[in-house]
Length: 202
Ligand SMILES: Nc1ncnc2c1ncn2[C@@H]1O[C@H](COP(=O)(O)OP(=O)(O)OP(=O)(O)O)[C@@H](O)[C@H]1O
Image (cartoon, rainbow, N blue to C red):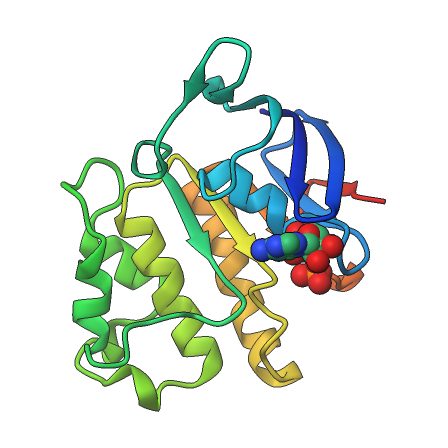
């Protein structure tokens, strides 16, 4: 499912990263500075590896030797960050519509239902709780019709109660959406509850 062998260079940071996982939902762990976010950025096409290859679910996104380097918008990646990064001047509905593409697989109403955000559609994003904002961010990612979901510590900015609230939604996304998912987390508990396999960057 996930076949990555890349050389990442960022300032003084240099690392060979090799991930071979057949599991659909993989957690990426490791100490601060190990390169977890850099791996997600390389998959999303935001950071170009110096060399190597990225293949996910049979799609080659990057292959240095073969001259393949898909631009970010063609990689079909849904990216959810630690902070929801919603647009503050738009309401929830407009945020959801922002990156929306012609509905192929994920339609508006079922995504809203899956994430339980129907009652929030007319709300301004500034008034949302952290967990609600993350659900909207996941919805926005799904409506961009991704082939792959990346999560960069989506729970770490939330207090324990909000975290507990969000985990079942992440589990629903995992079980009902059935896309490949790569999930960066420092929390072993989250990893156990969400991922099928764990890859640790040393
Ligand atoms: N723009 C940059 N310029 C130079 N070095 C950078 C840049 N961004 C990140 N780095 C360095 O690259 C390394 C990997 O960073 P990265 O953010 O991928 O790690 P991480 O495992 O996600 O860490 P954390 O858990 O703290 O988020 C770090 O040593 C970091 O200092």
